[in-house]
Length: 153
Image (cartoon, rainbow, N blue to C red; front, side, top):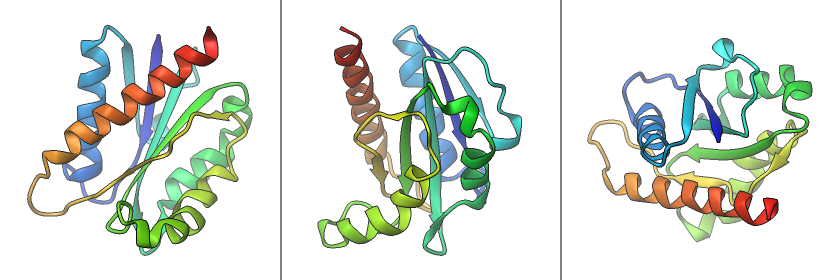
């Protein structure tokens, strides 16, 4: 399996970057070929899964990710897509409808490929590394891989 991770951030070497590193390491340890790209670097190759990640800034997914989805709509048309977001309200049931409407819907409406559920929702951090998120993102990507395996069998 070949996996591309397309992601962006405004804060280098912080939460989103660390989540991408954890994802890459987990997938690589499973023998899966992984390449990571910032939106402007993406090379449309033969990827079986494209994981797209964005932090939420000022109540919106990053503009660079939204632009990427729009400009690569035809490239993503027949692809399997997994999405994840990072933000403060992502884990609270109280904000569930809000998160789906404000953070996830703008991403989904720009995707022409097949979205593999669930959309990953993770808590970000700014100062202190939150190692609890490592297990969460690994569990999430394993669930995504399981969903793909079920669809392909």
